[in-house]
Image (cartoon, rainbow, N blue to C red; front, side, top):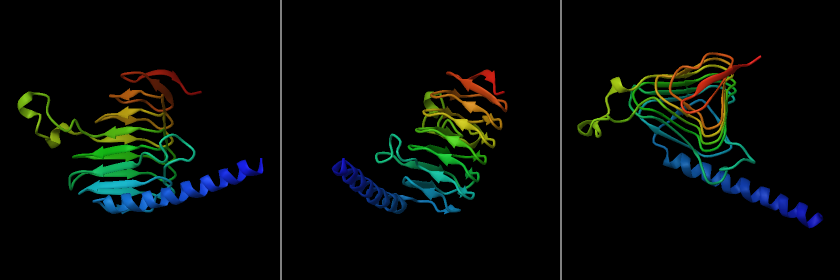
Length: 197
């Protein structure tokens, strides 16, 4: 029993050292500065030419949770006019991906975001063959996640969506339209399945 406790303690110390090195490495790989000071339990790669802003007490990464050592948070405000803002007290699990290409992504205060969530403000290219190498600002639309939203793991939130305060988005849903406050939404595409009492 004592040997097992020692092994667990050594493993935890090794994990923390490795993660601190990974956080430093992804900081060096980042091409954008962030405003605010998120608590990094997992590496963050910040990219793009726009604004990436964290209010107080935003946490990125969860231990123990899948993907802690083999994924990282990727946040990009691609164009100079693009913006990504995370509200105070929001906690984001491992493997988060968020790209604002031409507009904005705003995540409210006190949100919980599961592992491998992806939020996008754009299609990033046209549908017609001649437009597949083009990205136009008019093809992007802002995303707003209001306060206290709970987003399950593997959720995809696409351009132009507003998720109302207190809503729950179930695991693996794809959100393509607005979700009202205080409901549970699930499915592909996500639909309201019941109110939250």
